[in-house]
Length: 159
Image (cartoon, rainbow, N blue to C red; front, top):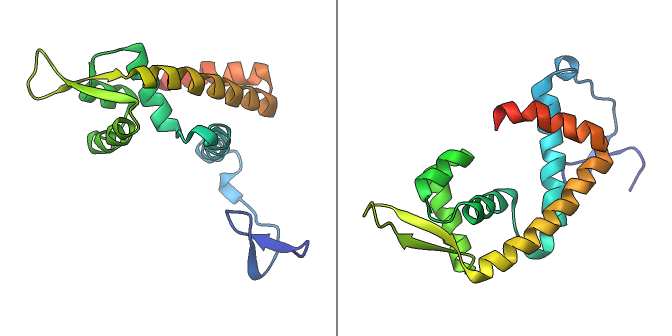
């Protein structure tokens, strides 16, 4: 590939385009833009690091919350993680198909289900957490351990 060929988002050269310096104008110093670029890097690294186990960041979050709070309702998980209810139902369906999560009718509310990890889900979550820790090491390598800690302190206001 020519050294001056421009690449698309997936790294492939765009036909007939040459690299040109593209100014960012008002995006320079814009917190939202910088956070979004970092989020893209974070998600790509997470997906690459956990690729062998086919777990996405949102699935990991759901499994982690269910593992830490057995018996939570779907609504409580959706609300705590800021996931649309319909999207969570689809996500839980896929985790249930993989035998990682089970829904149990609630004893207190006939309309809801309590969420639990299966035995397989508990074992898998331990493996996922080890891989997620590896991902966090990548973050620390990228921005420095002290900066990572500072970033977590700043972002904790939004958790």
